[in-house]
Amino acid sequence: MDKKQRTYLVTGGAGFIGSNYIHYMFDKYDDEIFIINVDKLTYAGNLANLKDIESRDNYRFVRADIGDREAITAILKEYDVDRVVHFAAESHVDRSIKDPEIFVRTNVLGTATLLNCVKEAWQQEDGSFAEGKKFLHVSTDEVYGTLDEPKEGEEPTYFYETTPYDPHSPYSASKASSDFTVKAYIDTYGFPANITNCSNNYGAYQFPEKLIPLVIHNALSGKELPVYGDGKNVRDWLYVMDHAKGIDMVQEQGKLGETYNIGGHNERQNIQIIKTILATLQELLPDDDPRKANVSEDLITYVTDRLGHDRRYAIAPDKIKKDIGWEPDTCFEDGIRLTVKWYLEHEDWVENVTSGDYQKYYEEMYAGR
Ligand code: NAD
Ligand code: TYD
Image (tube, rainbow, N blue to C red; front, top):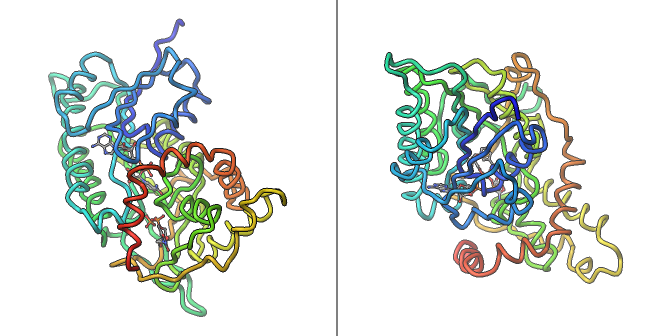
């Protein structure tokens, strides 16, 4: 290889979006890049997501906590890291309502430690940062709070990069805090970073505590499909590979210091999502598959609403489209088919992640709802 491989430090690469991103990057850049994946392997981290990547010479996995200063510093001493892409986080709103502290530890303190280690590794004697060093902080649209449903005859409202932060859940509050810490590094030290705020993702390898994989998994086993509140809360869904593409494009073409919203204008009520999944399962399952008989709208069960449940999220992706030319490739109809098909073909993966602690989690989270 003549050209120096560009070296990436990816945090949380064994999780849902991180592992899809690593697949996306190796598909796109092959041996032009070297990726070090740093992940603590919480309940949400699963090395099986990266089985086909493990044997690559240009990939290394390190099990570490982003809040472990020594471990992170050691990696940054061993490798001349050009890019950091920071996914590692506690990511589930329901868990944050039950146990907020771990969200502060990982998302706020962990991000602060990671940032400081990277700053120390990258900062030159005169305080500046060498050309080509870039940190991308992966965040969420949930930091902006909630939007009203558009009233008859009124234009719908959207989240823009300029929308004031107004987080409601412990999860979104911790992400907002981490975003502000990154912004502070940009403004104080001229730290070379970008922030992306993306809408809800769906696709392969998503842990079945989140709505879409949970509904697929429960429907196949004939279990109730728990709908919070009236089922009319709206989320703006994006296929995970389109998010991966957006992250890469922002890091390559974005202006340092800027924030970019990522979303594909795909707003759906939760109940619509559930009905679409049921219809897709009915269509994809062969008639002689015994699981087909389980799949029915009769499983839909309205349960007690989530505390502080945000009503509607909707991203305005105008800036990333105009400045960088990003647009999603996969429409929801195709993406949901691909996703349902993936779960049908990877029952062993689902079996593996839903055994053990998942059962306990499920019983506790949904008991008495
Ligand atoms: P996930 O829960 O599937 O994965 C998180 C990963 O981080 C796991 O592999 C876990 O082991 C690892 N991790 C957790 N704590 C860690 C720690 N202290 N040190 C090192 N590793 C740790 O999450 P996801 O859905 O893939 O989300 C990834 C990122 O994208 C998060 O920052 C999240 O806020 C953001 N995001 C998610 C969505 C979404 O719809 N899932 C949308 C927008 C933004
Ligand atoms: P989720 O996938 O947890 O993502 P987020 O809360 O980060 O948007 O939930 C998506 C929507 O689905 C949200 O409005 C809550 C709702 N929901 C249910 O109705 N039932 C469920 O069992 C779950 C997990 C979520």
